[in-house]
Amino acid sequence: MNASATLPADDQFDPEQLETGRKLFAGACTFLLGAAGLAQIPAAGLPEIAFAGRSNVGKSSLVNALTGRKALARTSHTPGRTQQINFFDLGGRLMMTDLPGYGYAEAPKEQVARWTRLIKAYLKGRAELRRVMVLVDSRHGLKDVDREILKMLDEAAVSYQVVLTKVDKIKAQQLERLLEETHGELARHVAAHPIIRCTSSAKKVGLEDLRAELAALAT
Image (cartoon, rainbow, N blue to C red; front, side, top):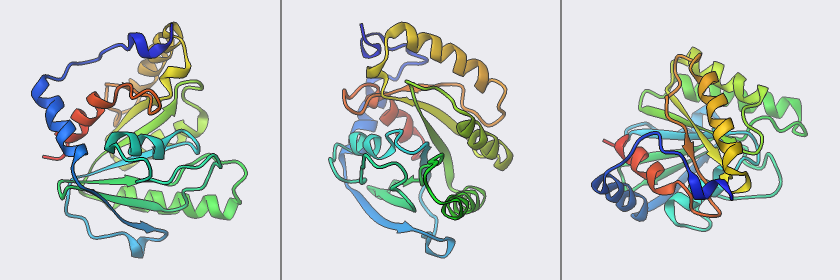
């Protein structure tokens, strides 16, 4: 039995909340720009959520799955392809940002350092940023490079929430154990949201709840 058949529920959304999330992500979603430097980051105004995660964790696939579009965010089998902060306007109600993937060992050190500086500056200077969704591959769990990002977010006092990806690739018992371990670790982080979301872009698992949660941040 795979994990998608028996997903645990940390909380429940009522039908109205689920419908609000569905409508938001079914509406207009426009790619604004890709910022390679601070000067290119657009002026803030809308409530904003960001997606962060290790290279090849499935960030672009999740953005595409949430919006029901196949190519809104570019996906690649080559880790480290996203080298800028990509901004998406969701119906004039919510700004979504796709941050450069981190932890790609093959990227030049200078490039990694530039990405890191850009991400840190963005996180510390974005007052409208409601939450960072930190994506973690459920097959591997939290790695040291993830922990470095969590520490950075704690220090920047930016609220973040762990989203497990590719849960269709592991068994239910593995997922249960992973959730227990991850909950225990996150309890030691001051800026961590207590609820962990479980998703699979390929199997459309957990998307309704994640849409509802993000829609609640758009108000």
